[in-house]
Image (cartoon, rainbow, N blue to C red; front, side, top):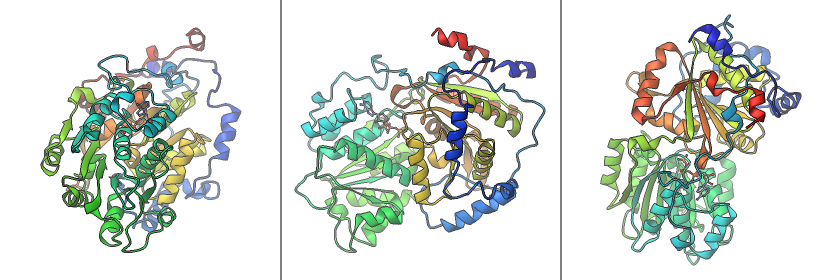
Length: 521
Ligand SMILES: Nc1ncnc2c1ncn2[C@@H]1O[C@H](COP(=O)(O)OP(=O)(O)OP(=O)(O)O)[C@@H](O)[C@H]1O
């Protein structure tokens, strides 16, 4: 694209209501600019030097090295942003039409091809009335396709094991939560269901869903097996004495400790065993052996095992089929995996400075909704967040070196709308469910990590791409993805397009409208 064209891309001139650079937003930015780990106000000067930032990250990483939670962000040497370039490709006062309307539902499930389409109602799924009330309390009206298909199988007798795949944000968590709750016996005072998740953020989020769903089921209690002293304390366990809560949700390492060392869960008594994000759980070193051991110990006629994810490679699926006894399998074709309610764009940027200009402009354009910006490296995420904060944008950073408690607090503030933009590494690529996320920005494209070479390869990481973009466009809403790519990375886009058979188009003038047109919509 010629430079002049780039300069013309964002051409709306007047502000619409809620436009980001207002004084209101500045105030908001100031009030939430305090990060729990880094006091940006105090150390502002020092942190201008990126290598100092890196040192800071290192010490934080040391502090939290006992945190066994799933993390797939990789770091290497510190790297500076290039000096501010001549070219500012993007004009600040832009109005991105779709983004401003992105809380609108794109897919309401009426199209029979939609993953949200179902021919049944929740009543027809024969759920317990109190559970049905919980679902209506959550605002669900009809099941999605995965719920409609999976629930009758999961609730049947004898119980069937399941390996299920469904697109991001189409109700998998709700499906296995409903199945789990349906099978909990109020007369038993030990752990009946175990749910494994790759990160503690996801574990807490699943717990939230189950708590809401079981609002009218007072016997339902949840214990969280995660490495957070505050959360663990709430569980009040005594070594060797079985926990008397029906549901445990946790990350693999802590769950293993609870079973083997503390002996507070008797795996033989389990009725439900769920592995969420099952593909990473059974393929990632560190997790896989724990998950396989747990499957082997729990599998039997009384324990129903369920594996859920939006992505499964062929190898992982084959392996899953071998370890799960006689499962019902729901699998998507590759071209079905990527959702059409998520619009995918790219903006070509020659360097990080141009990428930063693009980020700023897009940030200024979000009048409704929230955004996640993904980086491959912790150092990039940190430098980007810091720079945006210094430029008075209302942004926070989440990456794996933060403590469990800090990460939970950041997600909580984001969920409650305290700030608009979250800069993250892959640690947040999966599962996080926040309705208002309308935009995902790939500041750095996801690439496959080469474990042997200890560096990223030149191959797109398709699954991570899909999970990242799936943070927007939840349950049929319109979502947007912007890929900021350098000319040498363009081939990656082509590969992703071919793989999922969905276009990724260059962002251009036709995607912008002027304010006058906006008022006429
Ligand atoms: N039947 C339904 N009706 C309305 N909303 C629903 C229904 N089922 C789920 N949802 C909502 O849709 C959103 C996405 O659901 P959920 O988190 O279960 O998706 P998921 O498939 O597990 O996503 P991911 O693959 O990203 O983990 C949630 O906010 C959830 O509350």
